[in-house]
Image (cartoon, rainbow, N blue to C red):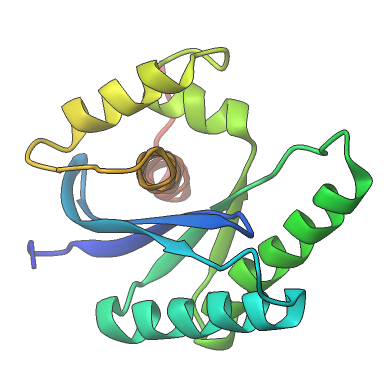
Length: 172
């Protein structure tokens, strides 16, 4: 672990695929620790899928022991049934780290894009390209994992700004 580093877990919630990304933040330096996707079986009942998601997150939290977590807000889907299921998955994603006593931050998609790319209207390929640039050596195999790493990067930036302000830094 880098001296003074903190482990940040980014999560991109979804019922079918929940992306996760773990970074270590030390000052303005970021280091990729791991990433992946938790997938559920669409043939299973909703309760079983949510349980599967929770169990996988629980194992992930035990393995990586993050200091903080960040979750992306989800957009309202045009299909009310799909939006409800996504909301339930998001609830599990928020709950799992909270039960471990880990602080959980939430960010809008535009905030994440702005923190990683510099504009809130960036396209997914731009976000993934910047994640690869900011985390050299990361071999990201799924878009959901890249999105989760972007959430972790966003949290690292926001966290750094909050700490600077708390220490009395006033930008010129």
